[in-house]
Length: 366
Image (tube, rainbow, N blue to C red; front, side):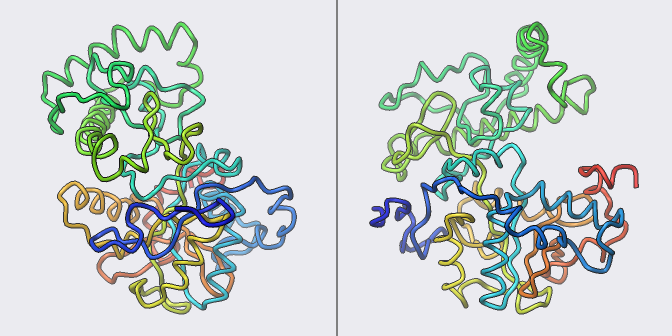
């Protein structure tokens, strides 16, 4: 169902019991802004980051660069307004830069029904059907050699493969990448465009890990999208998974809520105590929250348990990616999830955690 404006829908979990229950409609269509949020709110963006470092200092610059890479500006100002209005902190997972243009162009963000990840450069080696310009959108494909989306139209049944890949399947895929995919990419000079090009065993290890993740993802979700719980919400187009209400355009990464903190403190609190804030984030055309905070999620299915474990471990010091933490005071800072205290703390509270700086121009080598 959609609201009268046609911008929102009730997803598969709307007011349903279980681990994924969603309390309010979610946005699936928004019109691109006709004005520049960065221009209209220039002072806010000039002051991003923890005020312990002066604006213009190398530390503040690095933090600002990291924050701006993690979220589109419209969503930033929307989250800041909501945090200030309701007097609590909002922690959000960074969204890859590759998704930013899609979000600002009005593409739907990744809906709660879909556990698939957005594509990255490494997917370009595993899926021949993925287009260069679509890196960053939500994909759904089987990475094994011989798979083709054309062999599996939307209504066709197929014997499902195991979610676990064998060493032989990976060896076959690696040989295919080396002998077929890499030469094809090189003739089109993708080796000059791609930041990642497999050379070392560590590189091949990264591809192997993603190969396993994509194979499991496909096996766990494909039947559900075509014939199961989400068939009324999902549309499969080639190697892409789309919303049935918007079958003509790909989904991009969403602004994924991590959790909420009390007042201006670092302590995480359950979002069930303030559903009106969750609803405000889901109704925001700029932010487009698709579900509650991952910290509050209590999955039961093994596949979902693994997803949460991986996400929770990805944002802790020393090597994790910081979260974007909006404080009700108007401060937006880069912050880590600290599991020992169940809190969100400024990256500057953890001086030995410097890996995140390498993702910024100002922080590289410092």
